[in-house]
Length: 421
Image (cartoon, rainbow, N blue to C red):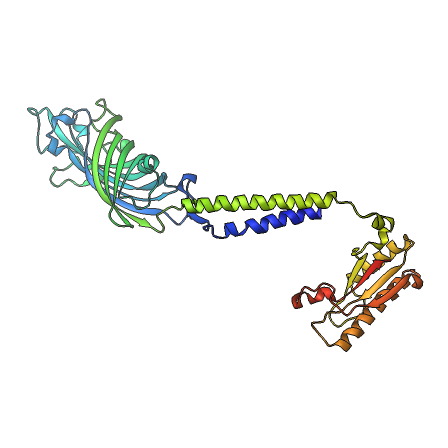
């Protein structure tokens, strides 16, 4: 098993330099894996829009088109929760200008008519609505074209709802000086309306913080426009066009997860030829190592060595006991090693040679001789204490190096070896 491990280590040592020149792995954001959610305080915005709307209740076509257009204003605060989805809430104001037939005076919003249409059959109406609005936003551009920070144009589809309070001219005074009052058609029980709407918000990036908005919107409005019996509580269309500005609060971009990118290796013909040559040389060396290993496994020991296995030259020590620098006593885990060796000796009918060692890189010869003698004596005493007969233990010292691996490995030479005889 040790030979196989050594063989694998040699192969790895040979092949390792071929990877030393490889490029380092880089780490980049990968949008294909989605986007990370930002903190709650990020991706907020404030927008304000203003424009014109066209109210389309049953009789409005009888009033000139230019006088049907009314002002519409929205102010929102909102947040994007991902590159695709967001919410916004705010307030709105809208003017609903139209016409009704003169017999339905209660629905006019006032009773003094400043003008008439179609030979006196129709009179103008106007209602001002003030209330709250909310939208769910969906970024179509990011969905179709993938998210891109600070893209110049984004198409944002939205749907939402409104709740409004209705104000009209007082019916008790002439139109020119009648004040606006809460309530519709002299009917305080029908002074609120509700609507649902949809639209396309066209957003153009001016800076990283400001966007120009073009809002194309269509409302279905539950307006009390023409009085009792004449479309009372009917749903009416209200298209509008608005322009505005959006200010982004905090962080507005989104981060993607970070992934590792492995470099693509490219070689010239000369480099490819060299790699092929290196591979052939490596295969040759591996085959040679395999042959050497096979020869070692198949090689049989000599007959005289088989007769006396205990006398095999170069036999590995039964154990090696290590000592700290300038110490001769058996310490710590080394004492456990000596105890274990004593148990082995009790089961063998053999004698043993104990050899004391010291490194020649520290101290002088006199000190090192003293250390060698002291160490081998300590190990012998410990074995005798464990029940090993003193006559079975022969001691000596060796003034050479136990390992000869150099000064950095001097601690391997401060030892006592125990060998069978």
